[in-house]
Image 1 (spheres, one colour):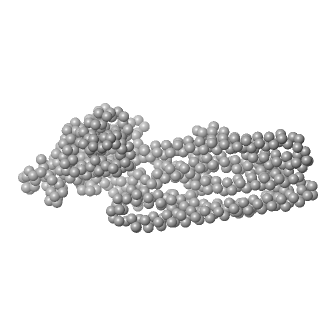
Image 2 (cartoon, helix red, strand yellow):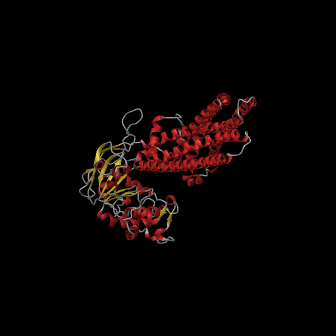
Image 3 (cartoon, helix red, strand yellow):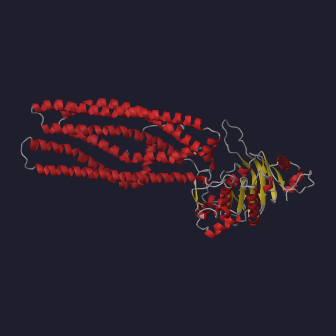
Length: 611
């Protein structure tokens, strides 16, 4: 949460240059908005002066001939100010929305290219904040900051110049309150800055708490944590409320204080200007114009104080956004990737070493998850991988698909190092079915097709039929067009796994990867899937990771991993005969009754051996 609390400098030239880079494609709109703003500011400056002319030339002189033209000119200036402000506001709001669009697309595109390890280190809620809240803050900068601050400065300088030109003595009297303005503004900026930092920190905590506990609501309810979670959220929410109340106090003091100082300036103008007018050294028109100019003078000051906070938060948000955009893409295609000459599905792990913490704190040797692993999977071969939890089974798949890159050794597909292939081309070879299935909001068909329009309805239905998913799909109200809720919450775990099978097969992969794919399916459905897989794996290279040995005992070869080392390799019968790690796993599962492996006995220790 510390990144969300730090505000940094109020102005950073390096960050501003990068931000203006997003403004550069829209420079014509910015120039137009700036011209409209200057035109509107000029029209606003002309209004009090026209009032002075009406009083001195016509009203004081008790003659009305010609005042109609001045009245029409005044109305024209009002209309010009309205049109200019409308044009400036519309243009900058439109430009701000376009910049938000460009920035969000840049962020999302970059997020899609980042490696999986980055998401292991960064919470999803924080990344969502970058794409949503932080970009919204920058929209405030572009729509009401960059151009309008310039307009406020122009208005202030213009008012001061006109007042000094009209009567420099009266102008100095009006400017006598500026030290008070400076003190109040400095107090406001300092306290609101700190208040904003605290509020932002508690907002980040609220978002994190909600994301974690709403996602895990079933666990919360199961273990009856509702009162405890409610109390914790009550504490966080109350602190956020109190921080907001503190910030409201500063706003409640600042704006009335500005109004009081403005009234004081008006009183000084009336007092000194009235005395001068009685002596005949000042006209009533000048006095009336000064009163209007003084009222307009303090409005930009209060606006600029508020825009200081916009600038402050924009600098902090831009720093977080650019930190994300500058995150290097560690797993990417080479500038000139190699094109595979064949699609046989020949896989080789050649002395592979891998550690998730490649550079541990304090130095020392990495905590290797895989240690010098070498094996070959020939085209069309079916290979099972077993081992205790944490032995490195799933890591093999992550490296094969280049979710991570190996630190030592290499992995080849059809004789080409996976790092030399185009990432999309490499992953297009594989169909992956995981234990934890992720479904998207949409329809059943959408979740099988996943946007690939080349998969027609016939292919989609054939894939569903092959894994027997069509049985439950056809029972749904609108079959393949039935909606799927977020994360597939309306479907059972087994149904979601059947859909993931259909999804993998619809893409007709050259290599099929199964990671505990049948662990959540009931026994009857598992038998149906295994029957379908027997036919489907006949023409595909297949790698199956399993804890239940019954699901991989018919494989052509079984690899046994232990603490990151490939310890055994062979068929089900050969590994049982060797009486090694695989034999112990088999014996444990059989004796615990967690796996049914058939009833045919084998000579190896009298243990049952599955068919």
